[in-house]
Amino acid sequence: MAKPEIEIDVDPATGRWFVDKMPMILVPQHFYNNNHFAIEGALGAEAFDATLAPAGHLSAYVWCRKQAEVYGLEGVDVFAHYMKRLSQRGWGLFSILAIDPAAGTATIRLDNSSFVTEQTRSAGRKLCYMFAPWLAGALEFVCEQAGAPQKLEAREVQCAAEGHDYCLYEVKPAV
Image 1: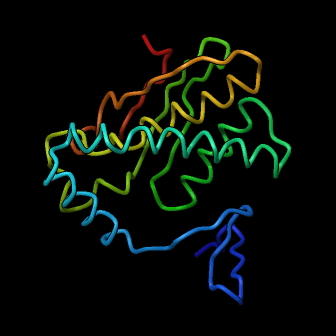
Image 2 (image 1 turned 90 degrees about the vertical axis):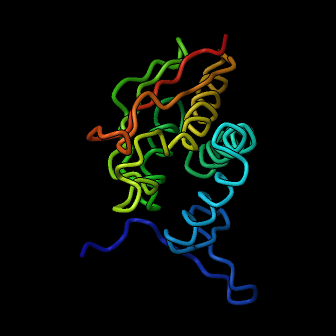
């Protein structure tokens, strides 16, 4: 197995893990998914998405801003770094199919989503919607950094849990 490209720093005084100078928490995938789907079951998918979306959007924006500062990244490089780190942290393999910060648009492919497992593969519905606001928040940072701030929205167009080979997302200006 290849050595991970991410360096983890553990603070001996606190036990906190840091990656890219940001604190992290490592949990098993089944633990996260069990909690995610339990809350979704209690609230309903729409209400759960509406509850998570603003926090995910803001978190992605803040992460990109901090990483741009830490690594001196600009433009699409910030977004590409975000996709790389999401992929390296076990959420799935994110690929940028198209991106245009001036227009505020992007198309993102997700293979091997952490939400599409042997147990959920045939759910027949979109399970990976949680990532959509992350993509919008990350691209909003890129647009703002380029001097063209705009409010964006994203949606999961297709999901592997619906029988597709991969999940697909579209980011565009909010209406």
